[in-house]
Length: 273
Image 1 (tube, rainbow, N blue to C red):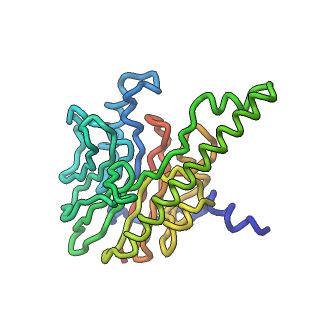
Image 2: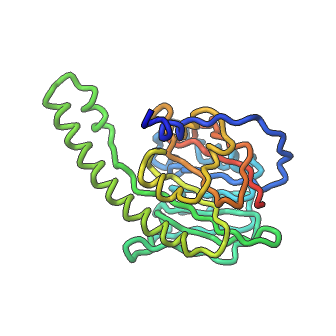
């Protein structure tokens, strides 16, 4: 009973609405470098991912683990904000839109411009300006061997595996906590309505979810259905989010089934009241 308010964050039940889709359509998608290292045995993943995005009729998309060293991504958008790292071939993040982006910057983390952690764009939609944050919080850095330890029948291997995983979790929790506090502080000074998209690498009962979600609406709970599992490797795990200021109303939240990455894309329609 004590846990039930938190457990309800894992499942959404909403009536099918008759929204006529006059609002803007927003997507968040961790593309996993467009399969650069061939985790998926399909050499057409990059092309399939781009076709999938272009066929969604989007107004705004936030991409995490963006990778385009050859500058050959044929995405159908008029405007873009690509948060470059020191080298073009490094992975980073991007915000594409069909509305003008009048201000494009990076949120500093620990005094550094981390273009693979948080970027934002101020976007003019009709007569309104909204701020879109695209975030990618620190990973847990799990490797295949970490999971292999846990299914081992050897007691010593299991023990070592649990200790190793515990150390990684401790490090990632602390790092995400620092990132979250600084991003939230930046959000609190924003003069515009906010759309927050991203890969939190954390669950709906985490500090990251609760802190960043303060005074915000989780679009999945507002207009989604089911479990909304967005990480394909672990059933029911939702770590990709779209959060909105109270001034927005969301419709038709969708967790897409296409598996061109280890994450599923999430999208919804928005209207600003």
